[in-house]
Image 1: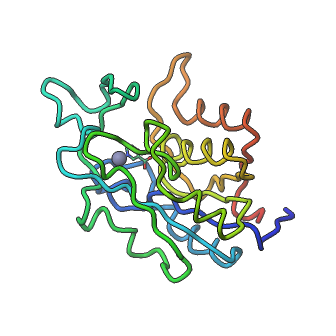
Image 2: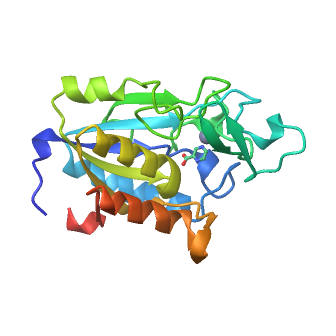
Length: 213
Ligand code: VGL
Ligand code: ZN
């Protein structure tokens, strides 16, 4: 694959133990991406990372809503919100970037979801799709035009980040063997992973394997 590595950066989305087996919101096989991501650093000049970073009692937690169970939905002022098990509690060890990730190449870390009443899947905007995280400014000032995304989960934070990046005019590639998804059921026997992939492909987001880079 021909890549202008000068203008490309690797984005690590929510590679936190809270989203891995043994964590609070485990993504199946989520820990398998750690060595793949470490190998990818060698190919890119720059890297950023995000961390999901919630207060206890965050509005996206089912436990914050009487009578609600994880994976139920509620209507928030900004739209429908899936309710999750408590996860990514700011400052806890499971909310850290996974300790086996080589952090030397990571130049900036964006934390998201820290407003108690507003969730944030995307690295660019909170779930109202308006409140910016500041990542766009960092990328533009660094003259980065092309993003390669990896992390957890493919169908939520990676997918929403890829969608926003494509809308903002960045060229977006998802390194699929460096991602894992949650896979909630979607209509038509599909999962949220299938739906995300279809939507992103329609938006010209490319999917590759790490050995193609
Ligand atoms: C995520 C659900 C809730 C993710 C974060 O990182 O994909 N998913 N919070
Ligand atoms: Zn979260």
